[in-house]
Length: 366
Ligand SMILES: *[C@@H]1O[C@H](CO)[C@@H](O)[C@H](O)[C@H]1NC(C)=O
Ligand SMILES: *[C@@H]1O[C@H](CO)[C@@H](O)[C@H](O)[C@H]1NC(C)=O
Image (cartoon, rainbow, N blue to C red; front, side):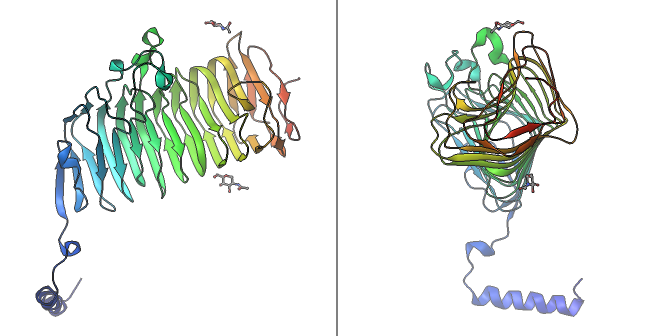
């Protein structure tokens, strides 16, 4: 606390400064609370310490970028709905440092059914993607991303970011197999934690394309392609990934590392799985491959996969009767991989072709 006289002195000094100095924008007090209830009101938030996002609609052709003040607090009170649009993605972008974003369970509605035609981003109707881009750091929690045209949330923070209690609900895309390429989280960033999230979709639950120190824990994935690193293209590196305590069910794959067969450089290293529950898998339970887009083909030899471990608590993998439990298809892999906490059952065993890597402790005979 200031003493009364110190306070008076401070007021006096402040008065002198304000008389002498030409006030600049940075001297202005932050507006206490700013409300976003339209596309235009989303565009100037740099002097708002608190932001409230109320219900509004984003019209055809518009996109939204919210650049928050450092350490801003952001809450939602209603749904943000996106009209069917000719704009390209991202349709909504969040920027800022050390942001506390709490959606209060509210929804960003992408109206995916207006786009879905079974072709995803490979053809058919143009589908804006990603739907949402989080370029911010801090904490983003407690909101729903509903029915995205294609890929849902792209993560590209510069400083540490935690995403928790977020639901990506693209379940409606299961109807007639119309939803396609509806990735939950696409991560090309470092120092990211994604936890307690739910993804119901038709493609990767998470796809980590580059970055380091990435934790994916206690999430629930269903309907899609499981937890992925990759696909890794030339020049991309991924290191320090932990998948722990996740549940993956009713999916094509349980978990994969997929490296493009034609990648001319790149690496994946230090990946740990612990305590995941993977079940009802229709293609591969665990697939480590350098022959992508093939599952198990002719692997490239110009990238490296190393230090890939199933440790700490058991990861259980249960695949359908006509699926493959575990396959490793390496062109260049190294190190001793501890797979002592992988318990895989069902289907066909698969093949382990680990090149120079040694897979140890895995209780299956090949
Ligand atoms: C492996 O990754 C984890 C998680 O990011 C990290 O804590 C650990 O230090 C890394 N280990 C090595 C040897 O780099
Ligand atoms: C595997 O079996 C499931 C039903 O259990 C079926 O839907 C699927 O088409 C089969 N896949 C193959 C490759 O036979």
